[in-house]
Length: 122
Image 1 (cartoon, one colour):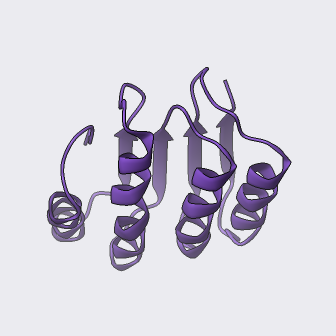
Image 2 (cartoon, helix red, strand yellow; image 1 turned 180 degrees about the vertical axis):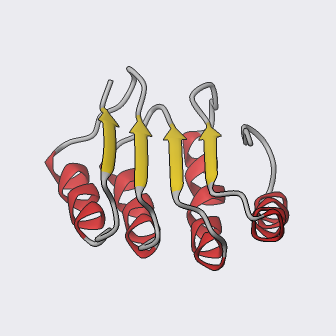
């Protein structure tokens, strides 16, 4: 699934479809999104809905991320304890600093079933 424009309702519909389908892998590509704040705003409340599905692999392709966006994303990622594989690609135009890195590291540390982590900070 690719989300570049949409609403929380769109993402909720997708998460409902994911639960019903039994899919275990999802990739969200927001690399070309010009409104990174909007992507984070849409993605962050949707991630907890994935707790109810069989999602084991999550790949997020994001751009123009900074510490604030990382903090917003870190909490829901840390709740997805069923993940065995996580890919985070932040593109070349990011400004993730120590604070954002620490938030992501704390979230990943909570994923006890995780056996594959791919992290690309650009």
